[in-house]
Image 1 (cartoon, rainbow, N blue to C red):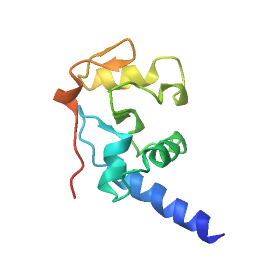
Image 2: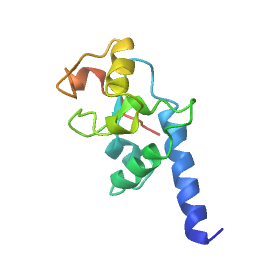
Image 3: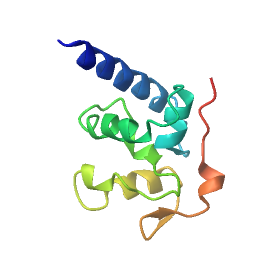
Image 4: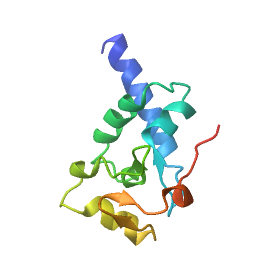
Length: 111
């Protein structure tokens, strides 16, 4: 394994550690996770980590959205509306692929 692969793997695992902490009924953003990791400009890398997590049952990837509350990762879930259904099952209202009252449900990972 190259040094870059090891670094990426460690970053992805650190992302997953934060995502596992998101409380049920709350969401956070790719950028907020990146900022919590001390890598504020790495929101896209957080997105790559989330894309790679779709088979990990212990990572609630549906709770990670973009900075405007859009379900930007929804195409990585099986079925057309699975991400929305999972959020709605937790009491979060979604309309037109965007979380209604985003600020109300936003969880800031502070470490």
